[in-house]
Image (cartoon, rainbow, N blue to C red; front, side, top):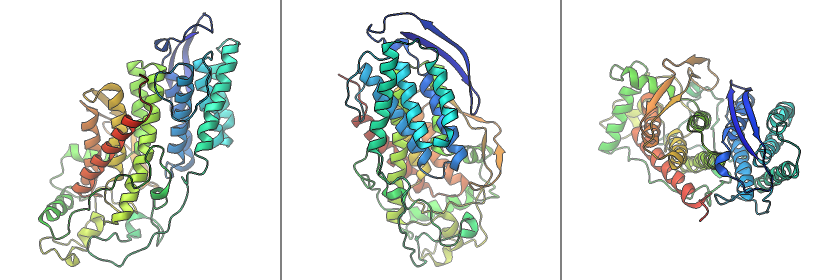
Length: 441
């Protein structure tokens, strides 16, 4: 059975333009090129919108759910017709409908993670299943989708995604992360993400598999240079930050799992990717982002390095005679996130994600990325529109580097935070590509 699906969607709903059925024998050899990746993009948008509505992506739940969904779809497809190695499922089924398998796998993950959204997810499922004629292949596809979803759900059942970890506050000192709840807007004594540092990765052997080198010495010339840079270009009233730098500092604020999945959906549709390639790309993308967060937060809490907000206001006490304090300094968006600075999590996650996209399209690939709205300040501040809402790039690696550097112009990271975040994320992304979901020889 061959299906060509052309869909368009709004933020939370999908409107079918056409679904054309071409008759054929269910037992005929599956032709991968006959199936487009629209179904993966559609389910991805559905579950990401659900995650944003539930917790604004302030937990790992949405990203974890999206990764599991992508894996379940990938494993189902590569059970029917092996193009890439599977992640977890080891069963065998050849005569199954790929669309039925993908749709059912996605549905099973979605309703397990968001049971109160069963009606919405069932509506999505029916969009894909209702146009497939009843047949043994359809039934086999549905059963296969259930099986691959059950496998990954069982595997991740106790992965600690929502666990907590104790954080030991340290006495105020040069380079030491300090509480600034008046700037982060968080309760006194709150630190974000300590539990992320001990969650189970999807691909890495442990949260600390890749250990970053230590941040710069506070008394070094290199630190002074980084200090002076963020103090000037990251300040709220900077006279040297260009309009373009201010634009991309704010434009990149959207969470990586949101903006980069949105980009992947757009690229899928424009490039008409086949279903197998699309499923693999989304699985690598979301597993890489997830593992990047875990590894980078492990590094953050290992080094416990301070933010520019603290460093600049407290510079009189840092032991470096070349750093000038400014006790009322503030950054571009007047907010600092409540966790240690080094390395940049945003830069790390983006580099890991862009590595997955580069593996699919080639790094030197021109594209335009869209972000229409971002938080004005912190995660609970009003949304503001971005003008323009798009930025264009000639490669995925250059986009990842701009994302990482955006945090310097936002005033929340030193340059060395961002450089190391980008390097670490690229390492994680390449590790994923080299070791998981590899093409079948």
